Image 1 (tube, one colour):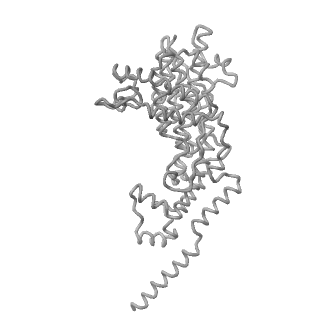
Image 2: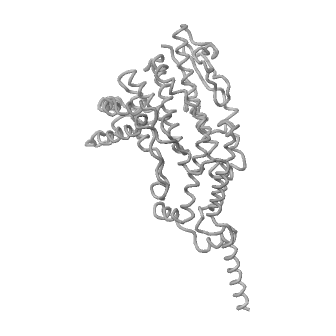
Image 3: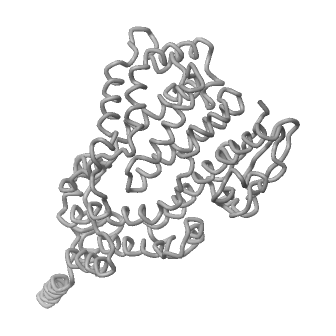
Length: 446
């Protein structure tokens, strides 16, 4: 009896092994998806999405890198008991709550003004880099896991540091020109960098939105001239962020496809074990997956398989309908296909972020136009239609609703706000606090 049972078990093992061997492997599934995308003319690598490198005369990336190297060498001395980041007001100071310029002590603000004077050589280098038409770094290789698996094209850490330094100059620069050039620099960082994947796009969008908020605060405080701001900033504020969504989705899919081989050959498991301390599945877990029809266990992406991963990458195509706007993509957030797809579930939120960035730019343009109207006519506009002569392509609309912004009077001030959305978009976390996200601008008279 035991001998028969052993033979049956042995036979089942042999049969299951043969079935697993005959099943299409992960390489075949990957090749099938790549062939499917190529037949539709879709890119399957980041290099295929990439444009040629611009001429050096047009590219400010090297100058920006040189400026950041200068900053690294010339940071304030830390010979006191407190590190310089604590002694000086700014976004880098972890002891300050937002808005940092209101919670900082007089001593911290004085230290910031001294630092800005010392940083004039740095800002001259940055201004030169941002005067170029584009900022492009070479696309890094994707032939290894370590360093490139979690790496990005753009120098994210350097850009975050640059954001903090420009924000400090935008608030506490010595002159109107200094402050406006700093705000323009933040806008240019956002729009002139060639970014592809979601995290890169969101870093750029965050810096751009921060620049718009700095402008709003400067107008409220009367620390910049609205007419000069209109001349200096309007060209940068015309950028359409929501139009980036299709390229972003294609880049995310191509990036995912380029990472799949790391899961197939097992090198990603080595990366997880060495860098993150993850543990490979046990022998029993591998066999259980095989018995469930998953196939080879070394192409497992815990808790999903490479097969699942490829299907979810294929599913990103649902967002690439040319008729879809970034606003329409929000409607997918409750779609079952999105709920069951770890790649797709973030796309509606990314779309909302891009539209929110467009909101910041449009509010800034309309606010500066309102000041221009007041300067020309001696009174605030009573409606957005009266600003039409300043916008040959049409007065910017609220991108959430595609309706005009709301104008209200608050004493001598003009309040410009997005359309009420509490009932329409209360389930979108990014819109919980309109004031915090810069969707209400209060414009005092000058």
